[in-house]
Length: 90
Length: 113
Image (cartoon, rainbow over all chains, first blue to last red):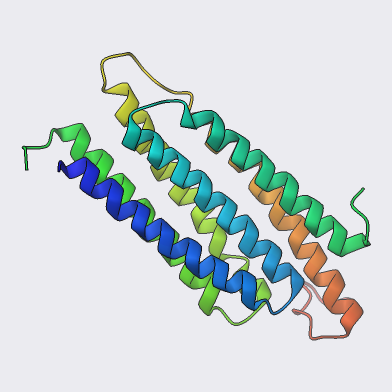
């Protein structure tokens, strides 16, 4: 075990706890915009997990996945917020 | 444990700092009492934590001997464009829905006479 792999494991555990807390907020609500906010947060943390996994496996293949995750999280959050605002997406 | 090199130490420190910051953001998302207060917490994850992980990634992939690896910058560029848009749309949504429901709104920025 090197220092880097220990740090990566600890960081992934911290991220997992944070995602769990975000998931609790997603289930608890109380309003719909709280759930959208929690989902956006979970998307961002998932993107960070991708980047840390790239360092862990020493591969740059995860970078595209992380970029796609940012974009899909953005589109999903804006579409949901727009739906709550107008009752239709576009 | 083998003796770690200097870039390894810096990458580890950056990653751990980002983990702590993401945990703080999650705690803020859970503990803060109002939606407009809760909106502030995830910004910590999408700005500071993303920057720290990006710097760690750049440092790690640049010290492998294969040259500078700057493409991870794209992620924070895209995040810095998309995160404010999401925040503004969500804030307007929350304001609209609260006004429709007749709940308490935050005070206006300036007094309308």
